[in-house]
Length: 264
Image (cartoon, rainbow, N blue to C red; front, side, top):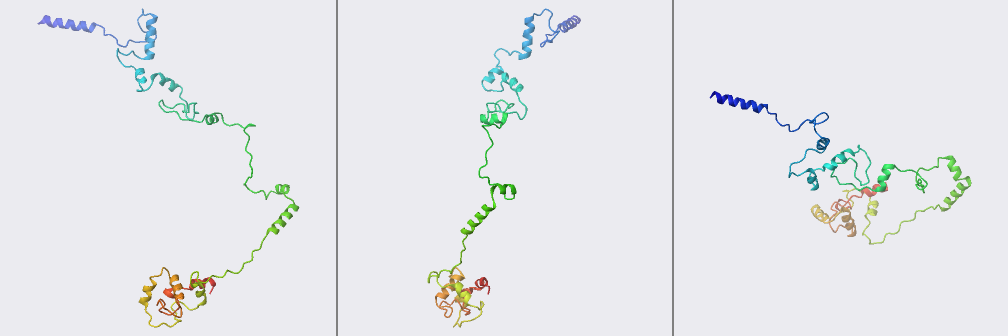
């Protein structure tokens, strides 16, 4: 039993004494085996720049990017180096410098892009526009400008021309209204009368207020009822029964607005 324990201890010490392999040996200036050749060191430097080699049968990033999956490693570094500061002008393709990869380019007019970059400069072929028929402020208050454009003689001639074209329009009589165009003239009737609404002027026999209310409801307005009232023999006769109080105004028609226009 003692011999078995001693043998196991020796095996454990032997395993600890063996040096474990280094998966990532130190690299750089001053590291590596003394007997390494220049080709081995160059290969190690290339691996540091391009990344570790893939295992056999593994899919690389270049193969994924060729299928449109993920970013393109070969272009990512170049695009990050050529990214411009905010506010940079557009490039020839229309996309702004510094845009992330994958954004579609925006169409920009080449002439507009050239003007945005270089600006517009005045030249004989690009002269300032000439104002024709300017409708700005008048220069009538500028004595020098008026003196150069007009004289006393020209002002007198213009005033004479305006006076000759002046016409005085004399108001004439209104044309006679044709009889029967729109029935009786209720405006003329309102101006001929002087009594107020509800003041009896004409005598009525057996007036009936309920009948008058039902008949007045058949007219679209009081003016239409008054015109029909006058056409049926009113105000002396009330054949329709729409003036029970005898004031001469049917269905409570009021002549006051027409009298107010005349001032009476």
